[in-house]
Length: 504
Image (tube, rainbow, N blue to C red; front, top):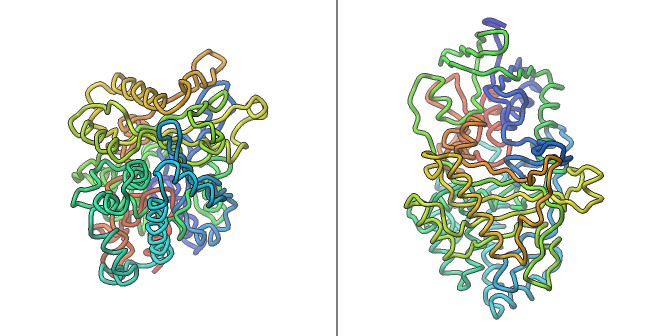
């Protein structure tokens, strides 16, 4: 392997690197993918998290929205992304707000029950009609060379530009909606994986919201059948079938701008050369490999994976738990609750009532459970906790994780009719099927600086015309991961764009 030459050496076998490898290999290029771990997929993987429990959990990333149908078709991958019947359920006292994708009348009745009238539903429909129009217009541009700011403004129109791209989304939501619960449901999409005040003039929350509503032109957040590992597995298969070479257990230790890559595996240290190097790693990691400094970002989430023996009971007798947990189940994510939790975390404290959201993958895709678990009525539950920045876990990682988990479980219990711990399945060794991952855990286990799931703060989907948003200061080196412009989420978009930049 020493000093062998390739058209492209891809650092990192996550889903974006696999997309780039498949496109380049299909175009006849000689491609080598180097993956540090013993498997491909990065954060888009499935795992049996609890010994003796036949459940394949999407351990890190867990839903798919941004993956373009064009990438799926171009690469010929067989992936089923199943739409969720229910968008969300948000407990509000002894009732709750149910958004039913299949029954507009039921959604309207739920809004009336929670908000006391029709005004909030009408405002909701107007707001999401605007975001749907933006999604339809912007999504196709994500697979094209960048347009500049003025062109993007002309594309989306004056009102959408003002409300989504220029004014803090917190101010816009406060103006458009009057109900605290409804405001919170809208704002959560602006805060997933993003530690920000939605009223901040830096507009980081706006960028987060934008990527959460434009996915593949619809904004739908779909369930990957077979778990996230099915997506990465299909992409790896496409790359290998096209002729790409994928080495796992191969940790890159140095990169030279001339195209030289040094990696280490079980047999020692090796050097390869690439006409181009595609970095499917966070920019801070690339900087370290180049021997340069790059500020580390800060992730801000708590991920909790669970297997339940049964779904918990709700306080709302009019809503079936299957409906409530099939979509996104919001936990203490009202507008005021989000603001209070942000202030507490910014002051260096774990929020007293952590905002979070859960959903049960197995309700939409039972295939991730073994036959015995399905027959017994077991379900998976995935929790994503907001406003849990890495700074809270630096001094005492294990102790802070336990405290954050304890506070989060108490937060769940506040909106249920029974403790969530009463519903946890026990593994054969007697332990409850529950694991928690903090940003520091992601930093240590997955190599993400600061545990930032987007590699760094999300960027606007426009920039220097003619560029692909993957370029670096070095001609031979391209970003092909989430840290590229138009990166973030399970999308394959940066992988596609890096391949197109190389091929063009």
